[in-house]
Length: 264
Image 1 (cartoon, one colour):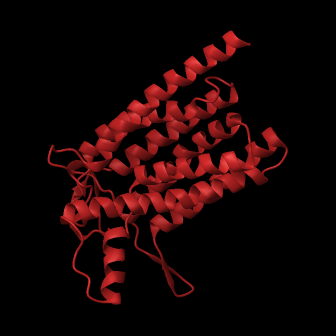
Image 2 (cartoon, helix red, strand yellow; image 1 turned 90 degrees about the vertical axis):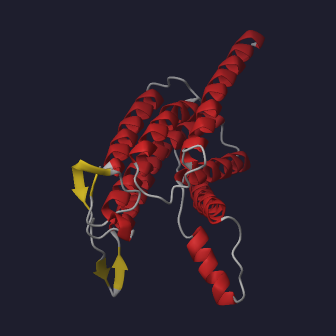
């Protein structure tokens, strides 16, 4: 949608600009909240950095798995340049749920390492996920990736990174998902400020986002989502599992609270 901007001889895409703004906004938000809660922001920023690395690796790994399944296995590689091309083609993209899983695992490990209490650290990080995702989806719209189905209501892409998207009026599913994520952030932040559902906001996030993503996938028109034989995309399959995890996690944590109250 937005053509690349050249700065100091390098092309900066609309997606890159949106993600950079998202990183700055989320960093400021986390620093402000961490100083209010812990009087310091060092530990929470360290956990966030570790989670970001995990999210980056997880998102590319799941994209690579989807690519290999779509291709039907590993291609024949006969040279180092061929290996580099394989890594770019098969692992160059990213899948949000892979990043969510990788980031969650990394954040859990980092949280245990620095020995911060589960609450409010996890709740704070949980509110940050939809906030950053909002900027990411705006970036998708500006970059023309993750585009929607052909529609009379929508926008015509001219500079999409995917040639198939250009010249076709498409439903702005990226903006719809961005709006949902922003609304979800404010809802979770309100619960966080009021200390409602303490320690359970990540499960609330999964319960809210998973079904929304499942239905939003039907409005996607891109073919690289990893559509399975049952007609569902990879993200829809994962969304069903994350919804179950959210429900069981919420119920389990609730039972744990009851047991704690009873024993206390």
